[in-house]
Image (cartoon, rainbow, N blue to C red):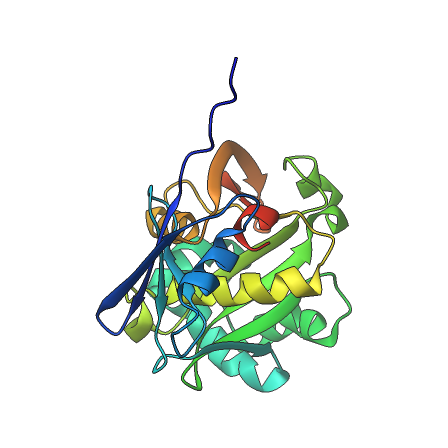
Length: 240
């Protein structure tokens, strides 16, 4: 019996109204395929929708997304973000985002005395949200609920209301993913677990290559329980 040939995975990179097309080669990551297809473009391709049969990327030289380490000077803005209605709906378990509570919760993460690291997401130099990451194995109770305790876990927020719904979430996550693949070279998976009702967050994760998996109940800091959807990214397949 002859082996079944691997399915062709098309790649499209959009650059200033034009489309560059190609396909993923055998043993090539999706990110590497996009870079090859967009080799003549001025800028690195960023995933915009990896959930369909065609992998869609974009090169947007006028839109720069970066991450930097969070500092104590960011805490007032962080408190404001956590108090925004579109954030508070999913982060209410953290309690009232007063300056004191935010400093007590996030200060140790900034200091590096907990396993969680905090990153501020900036678009063209403006702070728009944050990403926090950690090794899942550093939280044994949570690790028992996840498929890969050695994966890198993450949570993210687009805090500025003016930037919600503009596709920035996918850009921020892609920027984090590219950096995390270097920071955690031995990690083969990334893992996120948004609330099952948070359709917008789940869709953003879909767009950057995460795959939805098992639903499970997660104990919250306020004593409640949230039903979340475990979403996993295959680092080798997507990023190389």
